[in-house]
Amino acid sequence: MNGYIVLGYGQLVLAALLILGNLAISLALRLGLERSLLIATVRSIVQLLLIGFVLEWLFSQDNPWVILVIALAMTTIAATAAVNRTQQRFTGIYWNSLLSILAAAGLVTGVSLTGIIQVDPWYDPQYLIPLLGMILGNTINGISLGLDRFMTSLVDQQQQIETLLTLGATRWEATHQQMRDAVRTGMVPILNSMMVVGLVSLPGMMTGQILAGADPIDAVRYQIIVMFMVASATALGTFGVVLLAFNRLLIPHQLRLDYLERSKP
Amino acid sequence: MSWTIWWRGNALGPQYSAMEHPILSASGLRRQLGDRWLWNDLSFALCPQERVGLIGPSGSGKTLLLRALVLLDPLQHGEVSFQGHCIKNQSITQYRTQVIYLPQRPAAFDGTVEDNLKRVFTLAAQTGTYRRSLIERYLSALNRTPDFLDQSVRRLSGGESQILALLRALQLQPKVLLLDEPTASLDPDSTQQMEGLVDQWMSEDSQRACLWTSHDPQQIRRVTNRQINLGGIG
Image (cartoon, rainbow over all chains, first blue to last red; front, side, top):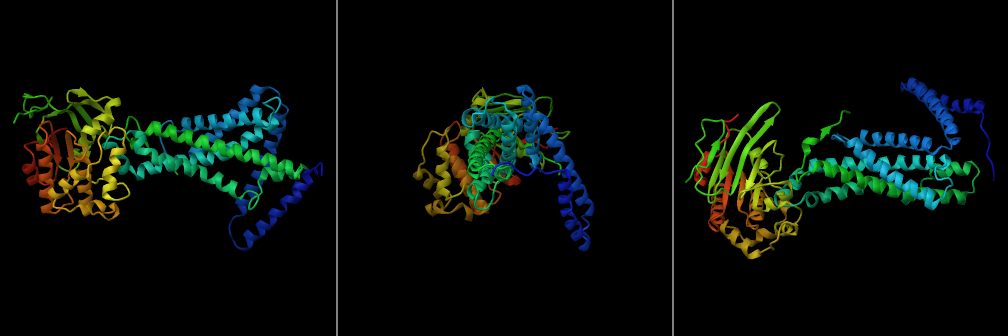
């Protein structure tokens, strides 16, 4: 079960022929997708090859600072992407997102690398980068869903919240319902995938390890750890970002909907 | 009745000559919407036992002024004082248990009317306890039976929601009520009963006062003893 078949560029070309099927369907049904198909094919080849070279270079690094800078760049991109999908914005929302993702992903990745998987040295990029990547990729779902839900419910339930405020409620008493809903919403995707993992979906990481010749049981153990890391980082990140948004939009015991503006589609 | 309203920089305003200490006062309030001034340097004082009407055409900022007085919106400029103390951020929740703003379209929380009345006492700033006998007394002044308490808020009409909001506020024994079109959805009989209830609440304590807005000039003349006209400002 060890080792795997190394693919050459010739085999990539053969695989690209599969796309000809898509082209044929598009032409036959006049879907007008030929151009997009071509661009998408070229983009996926170029982007993946490039990241392959980057990773090859990265995995040969042994300077922790270089690796941390790369990790920070990934985190920043994730933080931006999380906010880009919300329907409303406020000043400082990007910083809030960055701070929450950084704290959540940093804490969870750090604890897992040093305490659970016990990688030596802790910054070994072969572990740090892919683990962080998986955590970021999932945490941004929680953050954007939670943040979006929080802002939307503040707008929708303005009357309820302000009624509570006018009766002497603190900002916390007036909005903890909305905060709870937001954090719960952010947790839904990861809870769903934990429920059906193995039954409906085979996670890509596990499949990849098995393809690369790892013992399936080993691969499964990794997958379990990754799932828990993702769940924990999502909870922390979502809670963090909702708390920061709360602190920005309800101060001092006022609902500052005037801080919100619709983001351009 | 003492004239306690004045507008700095506005020759229309009578001069300030308070006979007693105001319970609620505002000074130097400014509010700008876009580049239009709603009010610029507005000051007034509300004394115990005063009933003041806030009048002005639609869009003159009556509701915004009431919201500003309970600090639901940030004060762009100026300050609000209650019993001589300027309201600071830390004292807002305490202040709002004494000065209660009743919005034109009050919200109700899920459950029955009575659930709504009880819910308020779970707030940290509220020290009292729910008293059903008091509410029943208020209800009889409104010519309603205690059955009203068991109604689900989902089935309340607009007027009944306003009654609920008034009861919810009155049971807290506030010093000042800021009433924003409180009878807008009520029939004439209910309107009169509600005015009577506010009257009764005023007479129970010499340190109470209220501020009304209404688009019905007759009502304003009926329930208030002086008016602040927001239309002439700005």
